Length: 83
Image 1 (tube, rainbow, N blue to C red):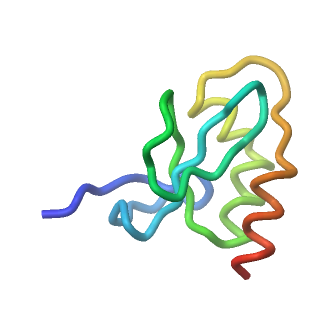
Image 2 (cartoon, helix red, strand yellow):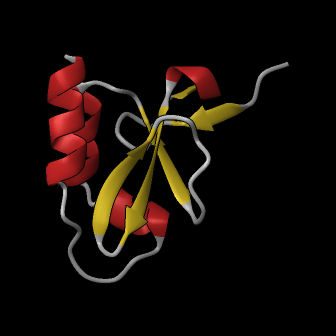
């Protein structure tokens, strides 16, 4: 049985393989496609809608338990390349 995670954008549950893990490295949101980077991670669907919703609701900041703003340029570029 595959692990289930909750998308921080749309708050729906999905299998781990259907979501993208995102970590914060030095206040920069980094996509962790292989889900192996150390530290706390947040899971999100690889769609611009879910990423935008998570950014609007500041869900990444809460899920990753970081203080201050996050640089979202890397994750936004990743989603644009996938889309």
